[in-house]
Amino acid sequence: MQNAKDSFYMALRTRLSVLNPERTIMLRGSVRPGILVEEAEAPFSQLPNDVFVLRWQGLGVDMNLGSTMAADECEIVYQTCGTQSFGGLDRGRALSEMDEELTKMLTPFFTPKFNYTATPPAQMLTHVFWDEPGFTSAVVQRDRLGRSAKVMVYSYQEQGE
Amino acid sequence: MSANWFSAPAPVARRVRAYFAPVNRTAQIPVIFDPSQQGRFADDAPPAPWIDLGWIQNFERKPTSKSAAVLTGIPAAPQEQVRETLQAQVSFQFLSWTKLTMALATGSQHMNLLLAASGAAAATDGAQAASAVTPQSGSTATSILLATSDAANFAAGSMIAVDADYAGQTGFVGVPVSGAYVRQALTDVDYIRRVTFNVALVSQVTPTGLTLCEPLPGGAPAVGAKVQALTGFVDREGGSFYQEWSALFVLEGSQGERIFFHYPRLQATSGAEETMIPLNGKSQSGQTRVVLKGQFTALPVTDPLDGERVVCYRSFLPAANALV
Image (cartoon, rainbow over all chains, first blue to last red; front, side, top):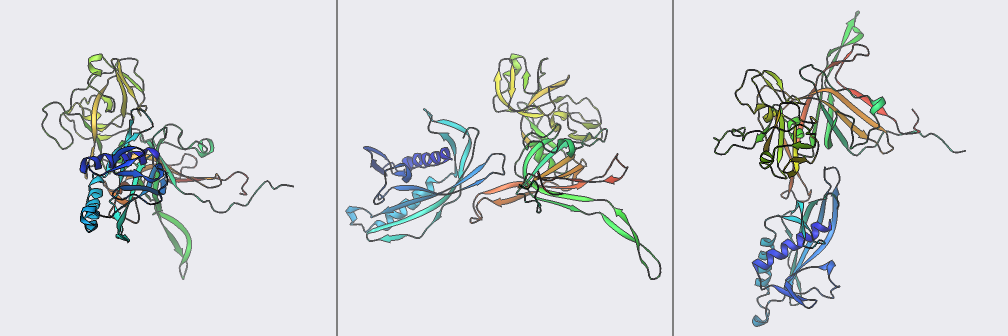
């Protein structure tokens, strides 16, 4: 299941770097595309603005199939204060921009599964695939506007996993 | 003193496993299952020639035999009963799409889409196929030895069909499973390889031949067999051929007890039909699983034990130490 989670994250990260190369984050001394996996970073006292944060939640498995299918629920959280140059008055537009980016990042709804513990990463035999995102209402926290989207990510367990 | 028995309640089972075996259509001989000797086989390793089709869902079996009372006296009262018709139906959904599950879930021939010859005219069942190649002696069920020039026509990950050339014969064709019934002579030399169940996936290609991911259902290629690449499968709504297989359904209870339903002869009743099942019950518009729906009519056999005609055997192997 970890390979599926890694592949989903890397697919979104690659797509984001093409969609909006300027959305970046400085993390652990390096500049990276503005998307991260919460459980793979040091705990945040407050989630960073203007980046997508992947939070893995529920898990289900269907063991009746020829290959066990795993369903990982991923919450993608993002928030923004807008830009300083507009005094934060563009925070609604900035959130809309992130909504659109996320929608585009999730299309197409599949990606090849890779084993990222190998160097170089090894492509596996199956694809990871997911549902359309379910967006929540926007949440206002003082000057911050945020939202999350939940996506069910499916994958088949391969031999050796 | 410790107890050495318990009173077992009704079995609790979560799922049903299906196994099928080909009926010898020419000789009209179904495959038997002997629960007294074979009842404790491992799920993944059924006794030959049964083929494991994995777990199925929505398994439903329905006896449709009809009995009638023989009335005598005034006023008339039942004196005894007679069985007027002998029938049973089985339906379920397959959880995989393979050559065999597709074939079982369709009412007619199930064909292989042979790799088309370069420039061949379009055809609904697949165009004229690229030439077949002849396996060399020493080939086995998992290793097809070929001339180097022939091996170069295949790639790892491709699928192959292995069977004889069609030579104008009529009747049931295909080894080891009768894939079709030819009523009048045809002209397609590849016809048997179009309908054969003797297919496999290639895992490796070497200058000396092909290594297969799983054994060919028919074992080592027979004399006269040839190999052709295929790209997929096709079946049709209509036609006059009915698939007929022996079937075995197994329920394993929570205490290790086993229930078997053995249908010596099952024929597909309906045409190809699929059911769409959402993966996420909360998201009806999301990803859906497309499952094959199989509906079958059980046909009778004569039990050699006492000459009775029957359509199904139900066997029960109780849990260890359960009172009987």
